[in-house]
Image (cartoon, rainbow, N blue to C red; front, side, top):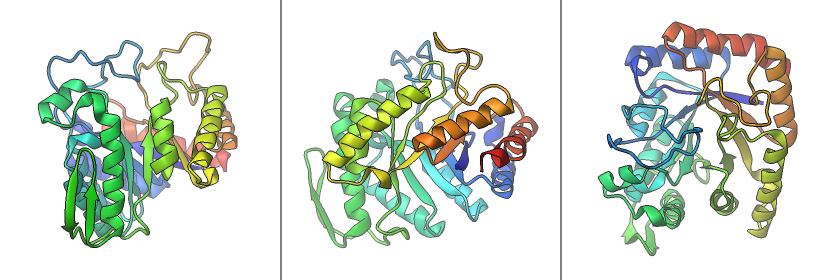
Length: 313
């Protein structure tokens, strides 16, 4: 099992010195993956419900470092960590600019980028950015993924789509990774599963929250559905990398019918949960160690890697 962690993007823990300490310790104690969230602007009045909290409220205040700029900074501070956009809201940015930026970071990091993607949930942010039509964001996202792959593997490159078209362009250098950085699809809705089956190198859902617990039985059902969809696309399901995120949203809340959330409780319970999800096919778990202070966050990371991780090998 591989392990990773959420990198803070707001507040005191996102200051340069704190980030440097976090990623230095993370790499030093054996974490493989760093995930970085994505919001560009956050309107002060929001009616869109956030899908991963019980009351639909977003667990932040809208302040956040820009995702790809932060990824570049972290790339320079690390040597082995996988750098994951988790997730990038695809329609927010120009697809050519985004493809080039991701390729550049992959080159400069010597092949450490993973592109985790989603379609977004915040209508008001789409409108503020003059992004694609929110109600067509799924189709737009699919088209952008096609553009990414073409830009990363062809030279020159052309594309003729419903939402974006261009002819005979050069978008080089290509990424270091062959054929391109892995693309992980976030979410566990039916459209997200279909998108994973068609475009994804990995599936990267959120679980272990009161609003989205994804207990083992449900997770196994989703994997079965994903396998059917993937094989219908003529692809090998076993080639998909399964990376599950367990953020600390709605702390203290448990969904009806559950005595606790997955990966919550004593170390022995967490270890047992890890083994259960690994048996289902999960190959990586992303945990949220963020605490009010840097010291507490570092202690949580160290505790996990010394008290939990060794018992899951």
